Length: 400
Image (cartoon, rainbow, N blue to C red):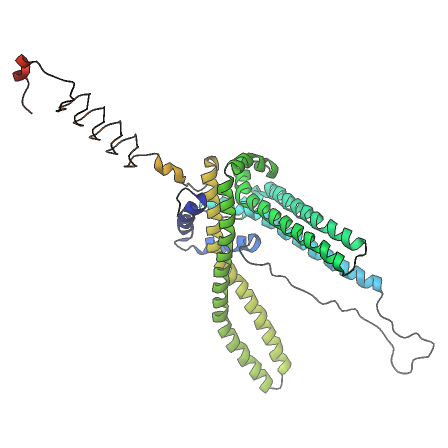
């Protein structure tokens, strides 16, 4: 594994930082991180609920006069208004959820940086940057939607049915959709991983944060490209691991619920109150879902912490001024000491061409007993020694 690739070198830093934050287990810290994971998310979804809308209808009974009109279906306009209201409500809730998630991105980075996870104070302090991040995400999403939606409207607007011409136009649309989706995902991912810490550290906006990082991202495009690929693979691996653990936990948690629920339902059925048993079973199912949501969020805590520390470590290697976790750049390992090879010119007995110190070989020209061609000092016996004592003064030098 090449040590000079940041995407690989950051794995060990992320692992060490994750262990340092999560061990020993602090229940409050884990629960706060689980709450952050609910909005930030690591391979999980947002639980949603639905409701049924019953439209009351009236009618008479018995002998109804023939001149009274029969009950009619609800007005189409009323049904459309109800559906539109529900859609608007869902959109508003989704926007509020996304806004909270954008602020939580900064709350998470503050906790990882300070090694002390808190929610209330960092949330209030980073509300404005969170609004900026929310606006940027919304803008990228709208641009992506327009890029994909306008060609679709153009195609369907001319009334092209399912025909060979439609299939010919569909192929480039699919390609455009894939390219736009990939580009939007990369932009939003780098914004979350790199720009958010930049905004937090240097008090910048989203666009200004991109301006700050763009020269580095362009100069280190190979490192960044490898990071994007590695992050994608890591995301798949983390999602699979979290899913397997949650599935195993669900099987374990379901056992007591099944035993209790089954027993209560059978008891209610034997007493002739099967509808009560159904109500109890429904309550237990809802409670089971709630428990599994909490368990799933707790399982995501190590994954969320590791993935975010990984991104912060890579950012610290790319831009040392934005290092929030204290990483060491891999290329710094070759700048100090050690027997680094035959051409090392720093220190130590490094090879025949070393020109610094020590007994380095026949061509060393500095000091020490280096060989027959040494021309500096010391007891440099040999035919090439430039020091030759007069014959009448040899006896004045002590024997070595």
